[in-house]
Image 1 (cartoon, rainbow, N blue to C red):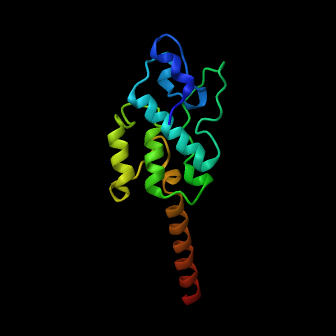
Image 2: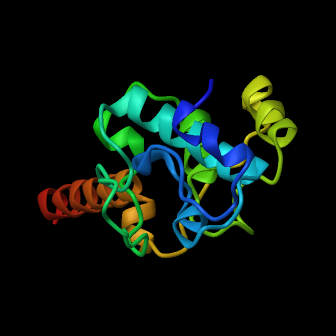
Image 3: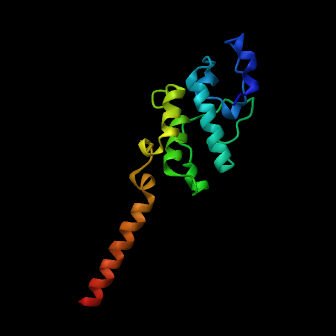
Length: 153
């Protein structure tokens, strides 16, 4: 997988070559291309392929986007995405480079070993947003128990 928009980067580190929607946030500050910036592009490609949307919306060449908002989890657009793959995608498109995969082998290992993928939780999301289904289940069970108690009493 190659983004031919970044081909000029081989000789220049002062340009922002590449397709904007696939560029890692640090590339907008003219940071050099690294394994992590390419992993970000792979993550965006997976996100878009599986959801039909870009994680941070489509970015035009003249824009200087803000990556402050957390992208919606891909599973919200496509419930057929397995949880382990969603975790890989979210880690690959993490805007904080410390939380993103540091090298290809790390990401490849998780793709090849889905049972070892740890769930990816965005710390910026509230408990309810991270555990939406659990909240509904607890609410349903609580209402069910209250209805049973009301019938019995």
